[in-house]
Length: 334
Image 1 (tube, rainbow, N blue to C red):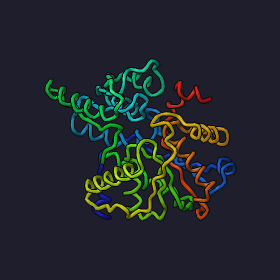
Image 2: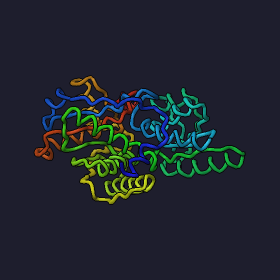
Image 3: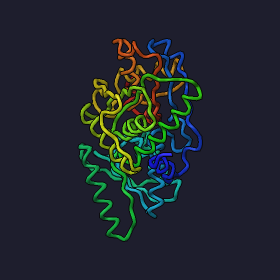
């Protein structure tokens, strides 16, 4: 066994993921879209806190919180953040306090993940600034203030994008590789949404470590393609260093696709909503309006352009986010 493999196995975990999340063959959706044989990796079915890739990340990050004897978790993002909801859930499960900073002013309506985060007992504040980076400064201020008060806070970066989170998705790659081998399924492409970059980083590093031959097709939902890839590659390098191995950007075939953000991050798009409706009406599976709906819309468009003509099988990462469906912005598009 490689040293890095032993270090990966030795990562402390919260045991939020006690069994592999299912692989679902989306025959009906494929019949409607055309293209490759389509499989969904159902991380939306993780059992705690409404699941999703952010809860997978916290299986490792949350264990580090406990290892460092923190008594309060500090993080932040947008008001409908999956990451914030997942952090609040882990804090509640482990008996820790949770301090949240949202960018912008308080919304007129409490809904979706914001409602769940309040329900979970997190202490919420707003920066009053529409610049997403204002959350970073707010997290830093909270950490400084809590330390001055004699507390032992643990800060998680905006959206949860950190190297430990990326390692949780390296574990997801290993899990998926084993599942695919048992099913004798060999994807030519793996599709996912990319926001903060930790999930993509983990799949880049994991694909390299476990010798996967697929191409990764990521769909940016929040930032320019170059920035999205750079962030993911940098996180992959940092994650590799934590387990004592190297990662060379470009060693895994990967493309970040643009054109499906719509009016902005977190704002539902017409194409995304159509993709969500297609998945619901053919498979009984709900994608979300912020990440997977837009990624599936991109997948459909790429099929129509012939991009996947040389692919026999594709794997789509369903990273969760269902609470985002229960918002006024989605209702307005129905």
